[in-house]
Figure (spheres, rainbow, N blue to C red):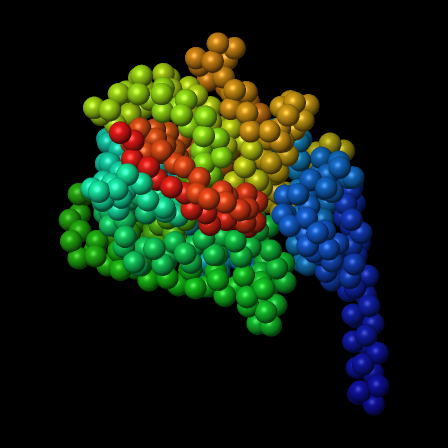
Length: 497
């Protein structure tokens, strides 16, 4: 009797829930049809398998549905915003400044909302203010930071010269990850007051795990966020395995770093960001300043601060291997402006506009973060005649701006001159160029990244030429993921006479 009542009731409940899961909110932006429980996940997967990149799936749907695409992937309602006008307008709305709260965003931080990248509200304001204030105090964005960067440039040059040796003029090396540890060192000097050897096996392994984890998922949180139960069935397919390996390795490394600081910490002496944070932990009980928050903050800085910059340098090496004449022109400029007696510095930047334009054009064409870190509607928001419900994930397609044909004319072409004035002696600003995002959520380390890209490329091109090997670059198409990253490639590093 119970069975006869229970089964029909359960079926009725399932049918009801299935029907409700297909109903789009009133005035929700247009998009593909929603199916029970999975939304438009099936259509997304079909198109993704065909195209290979999430941002290109969004671009394909934007052609059909317009600048606002309303989706449901698993349990998550998502709105993708494309095009300059729509993105600028959406960024002006503070109610889109939240961050999603889901399994993926919590699993990396002790299943809590911690850190600075994936949090919002008072916690974000407090932690961002603390971080920016102390990073500036410790030298970020100042002449002392320039010195730290150039010390790492010099160390990398020495390392490459040692590898080439005294009796050779060149050698073949992998270039896609050449600067990983060097870039981390520029950041870790102010975060933890420490640098690592460029051949440190532990750091090399950690970067391999990090690169794999960045490729295992996309900016929406992927399957892991939309259908978290699948991690038990397919840990590799959902990215859970890679992400957990990377997270555990990072936290073991960061905990050791924190314990080392606690053993030598002197209250009031702030040699680095961790020192300053420890004082806050000791002085503010029952606050957001905890060991877990410090570890999560360091993980955010470790991953966001090193991955994007070193990846961009990898793409720059790729471009210089392909465009040898551009490389030669930059080297001639460096020889004329700087010479060989010292390393290039930031005061040389205005006199090396062609190098700066190449860096900018690489950032535009590649768009290593084609979709911004996800936002969240903190309340119902009306935009362009549609309503984005509270707690909807909002994704901005920066790629769509960087590839807008009406503005760039030939966006698919690599043409650094688009960022130079008519006489070619100065870089021009273009508000359509936004590799670091917009608004209050703009990248925390933008100045550091821009300075590192310039100083590393200028210093390396002053001392070496990068020559393609036989067969050239086999596959220019990057890996998809949280960011785009270059496929592994080698080049010939040739010492300049």
